[in-house]
Image (cartoon, rainbow over all chains, first blue to last red; front, side):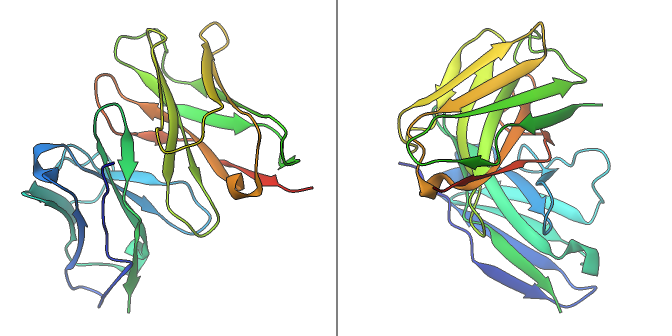
Length: 106
Length: 120
């Protein structure tokens, strides 16, 4: 089976850049998406097709995907960005999620 | 604007069958390429995709979830129904209904979720 691996936690200071990685075999050959989930809320799509932002998502959110790793980057991180983040891809009719990363803005 | 809303029992006994209904608006499940799926999240754990039904009635199920899943649609009512047989306490989770945009493999709209507890 295909697995996506994320670090359990990432910490960042306000105003700094946060990077959250997602690793999978030849992930760069597939599309990666990212979801933000705040406590008690439903997930929200923040990046799709590796690099695209849905309307309404701030420009500070960006994505990349190459080799075995997809990365979500949040520039100028704000306190409101503190949340769990999940990567997701699709492989042979199977939608897969990473284990999630808790982003703490200290 | 796309909206989805899950409904179903909050408490299910072990071994019983769970039936969840997703009622949606803002799109049609007859549009080519569109899909509606179900994703669950046990308390404090990660998201897990369960099933998806396409506009053409093609269906996909997670190979890592136990058998006993069935997904169906009623386009006249704008509803998608998920049934899970032989429920177990490990199936306790929040269940989300999601929209798959046409010919894409991500989920751009999510329902509010419904918490299902499996306990006697």
